[in-house]
Image (cartoon, helix red, strand yellow):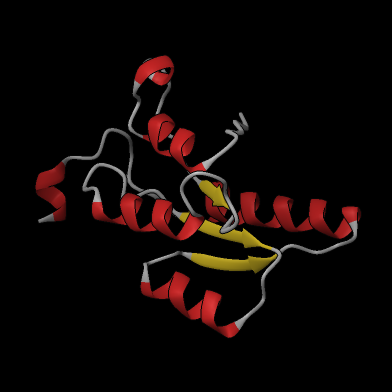
Length: 120
């Protein structure tokens, strides 16, 4: 299931299961744009990786920016991968498929809910 939220504030509400999102399940993967309204993608990434309940979710930055600064900043904030969005729709679709195949089929991620004692 793919869920899209309109801005960084809504992204954090969704991930923290607040308000209208109180019944959602924890996502297995987050595709995060850096250029979000309200709360930037970098701030969302920092907040996710600072939260013990959320930090185990793989976060892939999917951005139009290919600047070294954005890439370095994202990895310093513990992004699991950084992908520059292809302009061509077919290439974009292939990139999304590849990311999903890798993180949801090939890579192993912790089960939900995560036992925090395992992370200590």
